[in-house]
Length: 444
Image 1 (tube, rainbow, N blue to C red):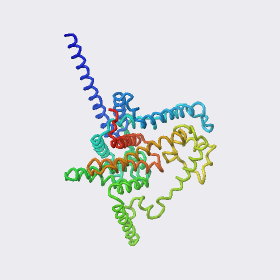
Image 2: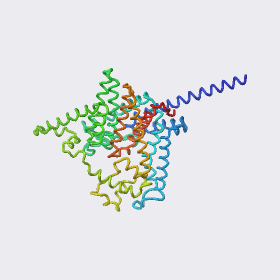
Image 3: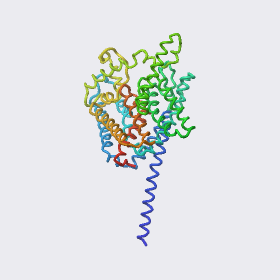
Image 4: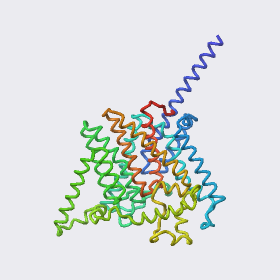
């Protein structure tokens, strides 16, 4: 009798633990999706939901995530970053910054460590095709208020900043004369550009998926059209290049050439009608293409050479996170950069930025991980002969990955918390795609 009681008690306990474990992750998933939805518009609130979901993910998986060697490499990279930052904050303080606050370098680590931990923890929430489908819907839905903010800035000249909760949530809404292009609630047009560019492939995917449902497909088509239109009006070269890459990925090189011929024809007509004063309606991005100076960006060459100069002075441990602008603008270095002096806040290249902050070994390690994930997901994608909705979803995910790589060749939008969180989630999804071929399990 006592044995039966013990057996029943054990079974009830096991069932309760299984139920609790299952709902544990469900709560985390809902928290994750709310965080994704609020990410562009209410970052602080979004960060709390994402953090909560991350804690639940790690609590449930315990150390299971270490079974994936790639996750283990990311943990090692985090350890190396902490070691490098500690050394730069104590022993190797830059001589040109004798009054540097001891907390400065450590506080700037928040730009790097949370996204790296997020890459590991968020895999639990994007591990299946259905998970990634739901994510894409929440991402695009959450972007709609941002699109509205851009339209108000562009057509109604609505300026901010607008803030609530003592500045915890800010919609910048800067004048177009200040930003040089549409930025909406973001502080910078380049941040707006990458956010729109990442959303574009998911918009195209959802149009294809819902093509049978007229009302739904038309609404998504309208949103996607607005995204494309606003990408052009950000006047961001990187965003325009990303849009072109997305067109090629989804519709092929032939469609891209037709699109390009249409643009060329437009400018030919423009030159044949000099009396037609429509230049004011053309975004600055296209005008720069017309002047054949679109891809010439000498300041970028200046900053790359300057960054390399600094990196080779401290190749192994770097200078410390967030110190580039301080060192570059320091009095002793004022005229050291080649060519002419430009005021820059960062290196405008993700590989160079990591090498400057933490040293070349860490930069090579993290860049290699990113390229490996992308390569493996591409391999899985092209080895799958099925042409279904989920294959198109994987194509959207890969296209978003291409956008991230392209933009971070010549910019550092990663420093916006919303962008870095989105990037880490997308790479979590790419990692899950890369594991599906061999049916490898991701920790729940």
